Length: 191
Image 1 (cartoon, one colour):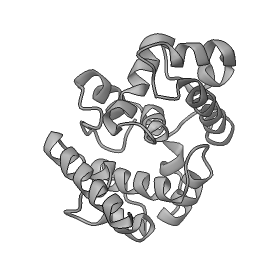
Image 2 (image 1 turned 90 degrees about the vertical axis):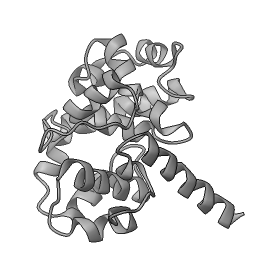
Image 3 (image 1 turned 135 degrees about the vertical axis):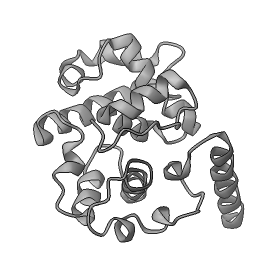
Image 4 (image 1 turned 60 degrees about the horizontal axis):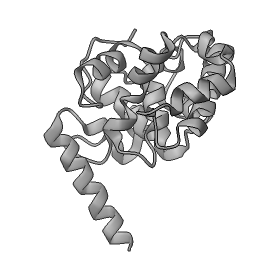
């Protein structure tokens, strides 16, 4: 379970958001899928997976036949634009959760003595780099109240109040659009 019951709105879909709000592994999978794909579609992926596979239990996902699991993830509407590739990453993520965190995705943060450790753990996950790890730490702090010592420093600018930089700042459709505008402006500035 999450540290406090919060209704996330990352998928912008009540059923998908309910899964994200109640299942720590679903939230990790959503974050994993949040790349090269519209954010709300990525965060609908765990719900689609649960509907098709029947569970989001990391042990069951890790043990699934890779080809069958890839087919399930790629079946339209796919869980991601690269459904087969992401299926492999989801299974890798599930194995890490099973082997290193006794099957409890929330143990990544509930057993972290501080935010630096949390970010280090997140960066070690398949598909999570430095930026994604810091964004996820900010998401935990801002949306779920999970704030290990030093969380703002570890999350960097993603922890700033009133910013619209990432998924950590999405609380409704309007804030999602503000995040998109910030990303477009950043991309234009780099061009």
